[in-house]
Length: 169
Image (cartoon, rainbow, N blue to C red):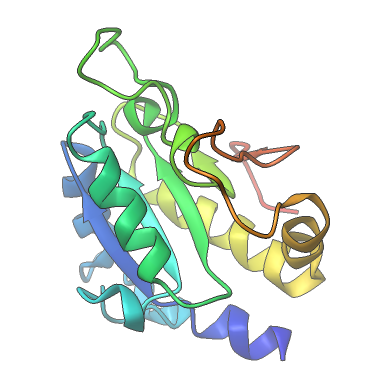
């Protein structure tokens, strides 16, 4: 079961800024995400189980991002691509969300400004390893509330996984 989940992760593209160009390059012929079973970026959240948030998220885009995440089927995963998506980057103002983990639970962070396609592929391999070992599914069932109340602060994972540069485990 885990092998099938790991081998058929279909991403939903949520490209918002310059990181989206690098995300598109990762799907092109030079890097070829098809070898990981990710041939097509899905435009419908009901067909995807991985959301790659690439770029800065504005306050106006945050409810849309949450709606797309809620429409995805379980199990679903999120990769935060780039420093703007992860922490707000150099945009420390009222209009930009200071970290997408305030809106949706992030499973893997891909650092960089913008991160290279190799960094995104490393983040995907890190996610594949977590799916293979079952670690990510255990964390979701143990530490997550059954329903996220919008009046309370959004849920974030207890121990987020940052992508380490170098070879994967």
